[in-house]
Image 1 (tube, rainbow, N blue to C red):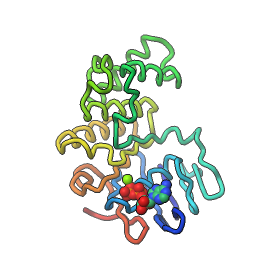
Image 2: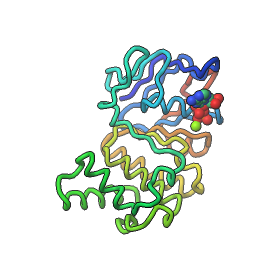
Image 3: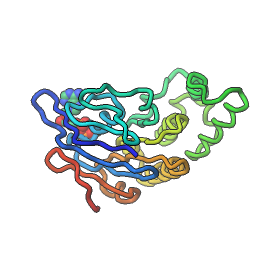
Image 4: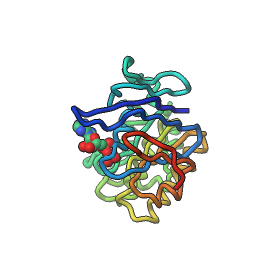
Length: 225
Ligand SMILES: Nc1ncnc2c1ncn2[C@@H]1O[C@H](COP(=O)(O)OP(=O)(O)O)[C@@H](O)[C@H]1O
Ligand SMILES: [Mg+2]
């Protein structure tokens, strides 16, 4: 379970978040809904440790991951993975997808030999609805939807406790979005992992989440859509 407690964040004189608290239970798909510029990505960045809160803390299984007096615990934080909006920007354009994928597996030692690596790759791609052959392509040879699934697959290699999708599917058409998110939900819930789905699209959030937070005066409130 991941919890935010009384988080505060300002940029210079601009207050963005104040008294922000939330709970992301294991196995849940939690939505974060709000207009552009309201602070959604700021919440995501606090959770994955690319921003420090001015006050408050974030807990993983009851223990602080970060707080105003403790820097982000990167070792424990690796179980939180984030998928970004522009999938093609996250992929090396000069490298076949396979190289990037095996580099990641080898660097983090997700597999101990070639056979294990092949099996893991197949299984992870399958969970996002892709055939292994897609890895023979260069990033520009695949569609936005496929590229986003590849980015999600890369995150899934970490067997994350939480996967954050920050407007990660908003460039896809509506049916592809729903499809990709259904795959993600299934893949994550298989291991009791959770998903934080961040979007300004009410229908998308309503369609797929168990619980929704929205912004009121810099604070998060649980709402029913
Ligand atoms: N690094 C930053 N420096 C200064 N202002 C920022 C920074 N990041 C975000 N902001 C400001 O904080 C507000 C919330 O941004 P953001 O969390 O990205 O919103 P959202 O994701 O909901 O569109 C915006 O007004 C934005 O301009
Ligand atoms: Mg944003």
